[in-house]
Image (cartoon, rainbow, N blue to C red; front, side):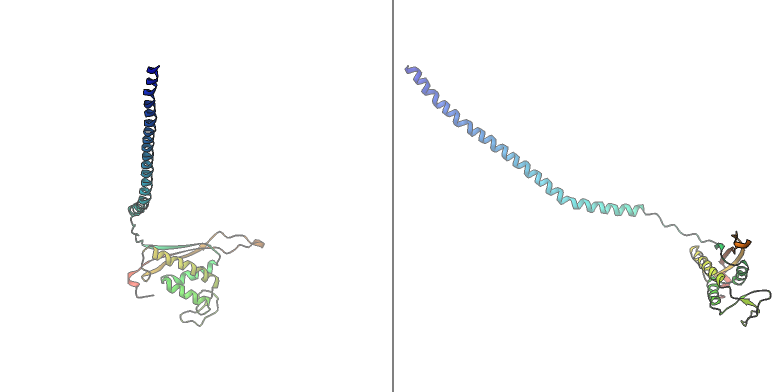
Length: 217
């Protein structure tokens, strides 16, 4: 009996010792786990802050790259080739062919600006387009007989402005350019009531440079 009691007394401190050691070990492991988790969270936070700080830098780089790429991808400027003449076509104009023919005869060998100014005066009944035939005489100098083709003059002004734009676009000198070709011909004429046919005219104007005529307008 004495031996058993002594054994039991010897076992008690060991059990107490084991109970005292184990919680400390578990606490140490828990602390290590917590510290590791904190380190991981801090590392993640640092990574997020670094990404946020680097984000605008990447945007600036991409913008710079876009600028450089746009500069590189710009097409080289193509030099305009100077052409010898400028052309303006008026198809199926609602004007009289007879009036168009006399206007073409008058503006031939003249500059575009002077022709436009003259036709504007015709619209105001200040100038006359010379006609042939049994037509009333006019008091204008150098003109025996003539008329005031208002509608045809308005259409020719639009056509002459188009010719002026083509002269500039083709690289010609506007002051030296002259209308060397002006022609009017019949277009397809629509039928009217009573068997009549409407007025439709095709007009072609061509201009080119004449260096010797710079002073003359």
